[in-house]
Length: 201
Image 1 (cartoon, rainbow, N blue to C red):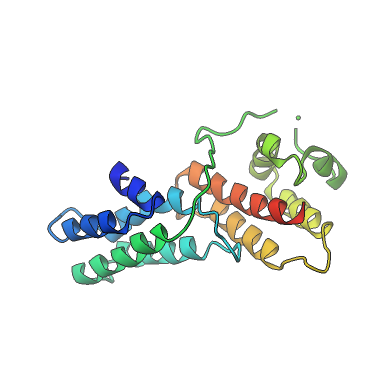
Image 2 (cartoon, helix red, strand yellow; image 1 turned 180 degrees about the vertical axis):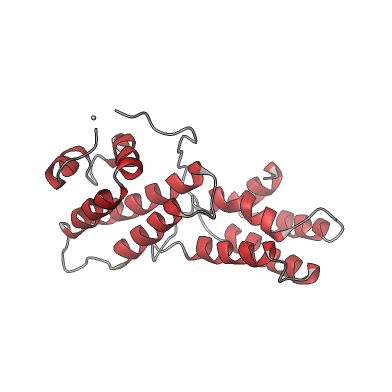
């Protein structure tokens, strides 16, 4: 992504974004699909997910798909680019880092829920992401089961159903064939777990 655009989005500099969008009108190489592709990782650093459901990312993914299939005219793509970039600039961001090369394969595949919980919990998730992603990669179905059970253990009268919808969307992004960047996929899962942990602890 253009570093100046990224800086403008993160710092909510709407005038600079408007200038960038104006320049796109004469940029013959512009495509909405490419713009969204470049912005995906930034979208997943949004920390104002009041609903924890990755609505902005999901919207952008289907817009990218329609762009790739040539449903939009150039004029429509330019207008939609404004919705995407200006909308993203209204959000707030956290500094999440996910190593695109992957986490080191340490502590093992959890053979039971108890073993999974002993190694991964909302309180220690930042130190155990290598364990989580190794289990997601090697034993996806059972790890999804364990995560949902773990979230359920923290139920109380203020428990928010968006904990589950956020997790569901993040895991869907993680398995999606529409995203090739592993860093982006991992950031979705980290964001969902962080959203849950910050609210239940």
